[in-house]
Length: 431
Ligand code: ADP
Image (cartoon, rainbow, N blue to C red; front, side, top):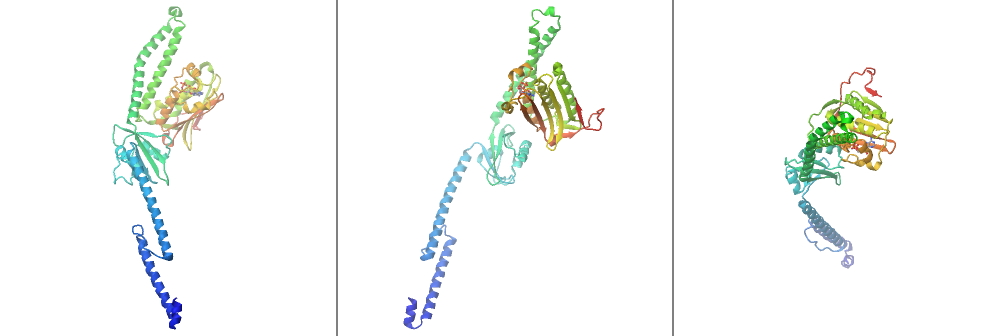
């Protein structure tokens, strides 16, 4: 149109140039309006544009609308999440990559004493300082929850767990387990008290039965058959009471007193001698192969109980003439106590439950050999108190291997006893 008008007035170039300038000026004006609107496009309605700019403004408007809706939905989901976690009786804490506390629900303030804003960004290990928790944080093994004294109340207990969340974050979960702990305590106290009360009458009965057994046979008629059985059963009950008391002590005495460096080799020599005695006419070949320098920091009587339970089991569950190998050694993973036998073996499906109290893979054999059903439960508790672990492998009819693994921080070097023939070597083998 401008070209035609320019031709009419005899100056087409000037008219075209003027028109182009006017168009550019209008475009710049609208671009400026668009830019001003874009700066605050989320909160002000879009001005009307024609043509291309109109379409751009419409697209931006639609994008804003979509993002607004998404934000609303996200906000609602967040509110719902916060409302439900606020209603939870359990503490939930979000932990960042470096173990720093990022967010927590109201229950965490009650159970763990977290306070805003001071505790935001503090490391969880500074808020829950129990050594067992700090150790678990390092090992990152959260297959089992952990029960600890509450960090804010001396009479309360909490059970904690950490699960992985996304992007290196983790979710710390804590539950008030005071009631369960009290019930456990009551159960342990009850078992300990009953066992303690039974001990004296059993000792008296056992004493009388032993005196009666010393009488000439003619004087004990008609109880000649019954007395040895009464004696055997009394001994069994005494063993049961002793094991129950030991288990209660291991459970109740959470603080590990009397931790000291212990020379393990002399202990194992003594256990081997007792095992030979237990085997009696059974003629088991019992070999001991031990590093005489290698000791453990721990409780001697507890370790003696655990090790002897494993060795005596090997003898009791191995037919006469079989082999039992006892070994005590270390490697890069730590120190290890191994007992291997060529006995009756254990069906694999029993293995995960063997350390439960009174669990028996072979009930008849266990009773017959005077087992209390508590030996491996004692082993498990003792190892737990020494940060150790038990591993069991077995082939039915072929034999079993029980290994106690101890971490590095529990073993020490001790002065070996003088060994007459093998002074040069640290490892001592007794056959
Ligand atoms: P028990 O006093 O019955 O031996 P334990 O707790 O010591 O109780 O052992 C639990 C069960 O594990 C036993 O009843 C037995 O069935 C099985 N067991 C333990 N050690 C061995 C072993 N060396 N060989 C075969 N079975 C074993």
